[in-house]
Image 1 (cartoon, rainbow, N blue to C red):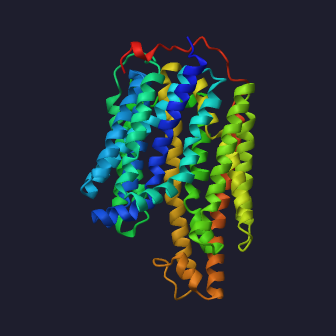
Image 2 (tube, helix red, strand yellow):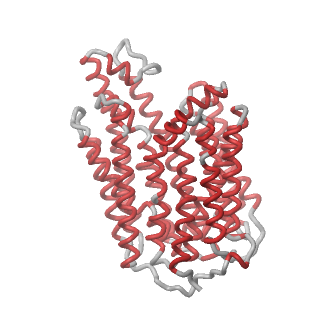
Image 3 (tube, one colour):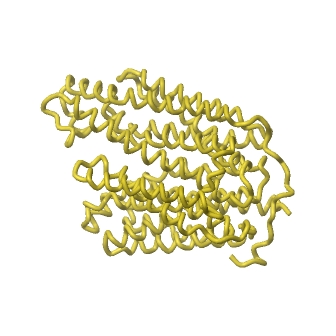
Amino acid sequence: MPLSALRLRLLVASLLVVSFLGALDHTVVSTSLATIAGSLGALEQLSWIVVGYTLAATAMLPVLGKLGDVVGPRRVFLISLVGFIAASLVCGFAPSMGWLIAARVVQGMCSAGLQLMSQTIIATVTTPRQRPRYMAIIGAAFPIAIVVGPVLGGLITDFWGWPWVFWINVPVGIAALVLALVAVPHIAPGVRARFDVAGAISFTIALVALVLGVTWVGDASLRLSAAVAFAVALAAFAVFFAIEARAQTPILPLPLFADRTIAACFALSAIIGIGLFAVTSYLPTYFQMAYRTTATVSGLVPIATVLGMLVSNLVTGHLVSRTGRYRLYPIIGTLLGAAGLFVMALLPVGLPLAVPMAVMAVVGIGTGSFMNLIFAVVQSAAPRDQLGTVTATTNLVRQIGATVTTAVIGGVVGFGVAARLPQGLDAATLTPQIVHAADPATQAAVAEIYRDVFVPVFLALAAVYALGVVAAVMLPHGRLSDDTSSIPVTDPQTQTA
């Protein structure tokens, strides 16, 4: 029988806290990186604090999604939460960078489990009609974490010390665990079957090699390593698809891609990663150089983008849950994203910062209108015993799109700026402070260079969103069901985790 209204509210509160904890852990560390590296005396390994976390989270998505289908999402969720708390404790006590990176890898794996199982649990205890509203509430954790994470990380580092950036997860996580033990119901797993170990291993090798290749390709000293990583990724993906074609219960069932609704949702998820997530990390640098703003002021543009995402995500989730109709929102959202990024390519430098803030807020509104909605739609089209798998794949294509495109944009910007800089300026040492201290003619020249380099980037991303319109139109007409007969829930107090 379905959960009571009170029980459902407790469940949503529990999943929201846990989702926010996982999302915040990814953003709160950013402002503490330099302090951590200096304290542990390993500046050359600084990037691995972030790369290790992201790599582990990405590689484990399909594995954990399938585990949720095989053993039940509640079990994977609770184990992931306990592991996340333990890894956070180890991070704060880490005596060396090696220990910290290892603990961050475990954190990333567990964070992926928390994110995936939160979405899967909601999918199994709600009707398709209810799902968009609750998905939007849980999904709000991500944009909020983007806004508050860096500020909170800086305050904790300055006043408490960097270990507390990780230790703060422990009391919050324990409180969330107690609430989860009460609120998260037992959900019967799908058909019991042998886990696809060979597929999981080959996919993990392929994805790790791909992410490493993308990470290394921008460093001239690591080009050979990047080439080897890409070769390993290509071979491992070939092995993976050969295994999946024959596996009885593959971690990535290839027939899913033949379903029109599922394929369209996968495409829309990838477009979010490619079209928006990849460029947001470069926006502050663009505005510091092209608009000659301070670092603090340049952060207003991505904040405006994220706030637009947050508002439209919540509004769209509420509207779809009321009517059941969903197809219009991805169409409008992709059109807004394409139009906003196209306008960004046309804006001349020197305009008041409020103009690009408004334009990128429109892109955020468009993206937020289907960012979490597609999870509800794709889950309604998937068999119940593959909810974890289809949810993981939707997250996976978004993450891969963001990772690969981030590296591509970084290469385009780096090489483009270096090739156009006037004599006397070195791209390797060029900082906003140097540019702001230069004469007005040099400042104007650098501003135009950055605009010229970013114009094709914005145009390409606008084209990606335009392709998203096609994917959105592929979604079938109809309404999400309000049928409660397929919600199998029992009291967790009568079941083991």
